[in-house]
Length: 415
Image 1 (tube, rainbow, N blue to C red):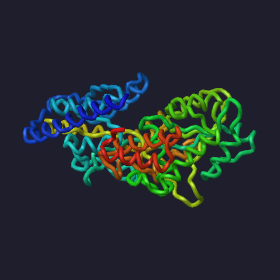
Image 2 (image 1 turned 90 degrees about the vertical axis):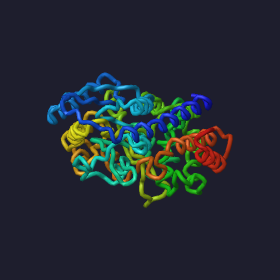
Image 3 (image 1 turned 120 degrees about the vertical axis):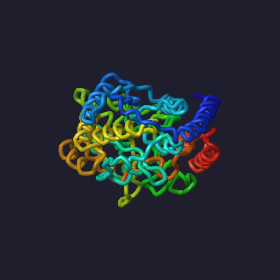
Image 4 (image 1 turned 30 degrees about the vertical axis):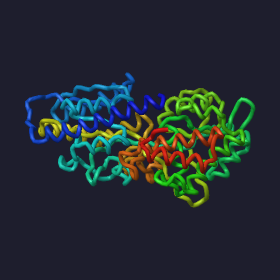
């Protein structure tokens, strides 16, 4: 999408947000209960047939426990927020709504969601970062059965052949990537394209080094971006990372064209089907020994929108409570190779699924992308990926690129 299109989209979204706030305010005193309806509507972005069916089965089971039927609808991910805003303006919000976790705060800010504590939803046993992702102005609006983050995938045979150990620090990563690089194969791959995916992949390097998304011009931020530019300059990463997304990284890793990559647990199912591929997962390397790894928290949160019926909201909260309980949390994690959101369930899961241990460990200290920027995260992410593009193309130094990224974030994400 070009700059003009992005600007137009942002203006439309801003207008919808303003209209939504007015609609919610206007309807707040006109709630009427419709307890006679046995069907709750559910909206998410799980459009894949298998994924939609799996979530549908879980929702139906929880609906039966709550004494309601479920009408389950999925829309494409890029259109979910726009769909929600339009439904809110027309007062046709679903009873149960899934949102990507960075979107929860900006939707909650409009008044479209209801706080979960008032319905007695169990909020115990979650890591601080997970609850923070669904919190706006001190109220929890969203929780989830399972979460994810990123880690370092590596090809065991390639590392063994080169006599390379799994890197734990940036120096080790740079050295290992160089030694693993061969004709037709790169040692390392990251997502550095001009999308939020590259911002997401950059955050572990930024945060673990003491940098923040609100201070992009800090020395710590420049060090993190310089690591990526050094890997490219060394010839250890392809220049094509500037256009690769996370699915592209997976394809090149699975085909043996890169020895290491940053990616998420959602790739594990496909990797397990690659015949003869021996792979492992390790935490994202940190700059220096002793630094605490901080990765971004991924995954979707389930929310209860504000509708005209308090009774329906209570039933929706019961379904949500069932969906995010320990048993279904484990089911979802096993289906998608993600991490159970409740800490004790995650520990049990790591013992049963050692290939997920690195992700389980990383989730303990993971942070939501909105923790410091709130609803401003999209503009900040735009500044970050713009800086990555400027630095890796060689158009600007890491310091200059990050200064431009900060300016973009400050003026609302316009490149």
